[in-house]
Image 1: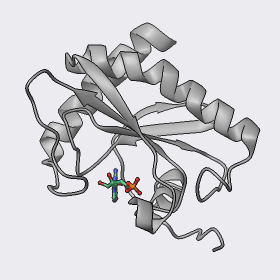
Image 2 (image 1 turned 120 degrees about the vertical axis):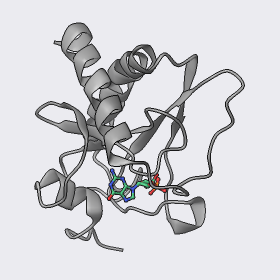
Image 3 (image 1 turned 90 degrees about the vertical axis):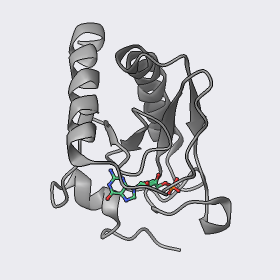
Length: 143
Ligand code: 5GP
């Protein structure tokens, strides 16, 4: 399989598709999942093209997971979550739907079950509100 430049996340990176951005640096980009499994479900991607864990350059993977580690507690705090789950799928049989490597940061809330993956499209205004809260926390905690 070769990397497809027209995957959704590549289009988001190029600004050809809208996204609720929550964080960006020189190497990584993070935004809200449009079909969240929980409130504040976020995706972190590298700016370099890579399909999955086997394809990504080790240094890019280190940079990516560093952003995940920095961002996760900020998202938890901004969303008032009780913990978080990290997900990362490799290959369609494993559940990968978008073939640009990404980590899911899924906030968890006591007694709130997870929604199924990619089940319900979230309302735009709710995504915008949650992204605002996270961006504010990022400004305070990460800059
Ligand atoms: P995967 O199963 O590949 O690990 O996850 C892909 C994720 O991307 C899913 O959770 C899905 O809801 C999300 N997704 C699919 N299309 C879009 C989109 O156009 N914008 C955003 N922000 N997320 C998307």
